[in-house]
Length: 195
Image 1 (cartoon, helix red, strand yellow):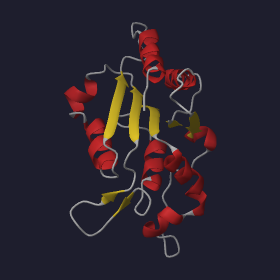
Image 2 (spheres, rainbow, N blue to C red):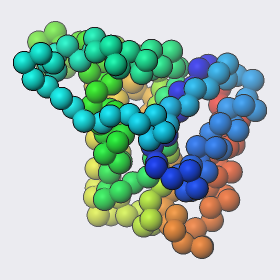
Image 3 (cartoon, rainbow, N blue to C red):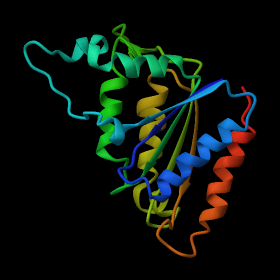
Image 4 (cartoon, rainbow, N blue to C red):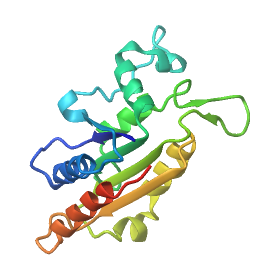
């Protein structure tokens, strides 16, 4: 199994970064995982800004040579792991810009003019690991789980990815947040991961 981890946080001393390190450790200890590749969007200086004009058209985005490296990573991966914080009830703009560009028509889905497109990323699975300052129940209570619903239905299901799992961790700035247990949960998940 090939794992692509997409890490989105500007601070390598953050708890979000600690979760990313547990993903790497767990994958390294698992014989079922052939390889793990890490894409750190901030370190990569990924440009999240979409530009469309007379010469750069949205419908041609799937052939953009500057995005070829990232398309190859997604094609290579069996499992895509997103590690990010929740800011203002949603993932960082950097990650959303990556999603806007990478999950494009012609690469992630094909529109045949019907009600739903053909998802071109079938057979892959996704795990979203997110952390937030507030309590874990906050997105459900106040936001009706908008983040999870949008990621699962409007994005992953649309492109053919049916296996989607979420680890949402709250109280990350609290000393009573039980960080070690949360980090251990991520590590154990990847150690036990099977194809």
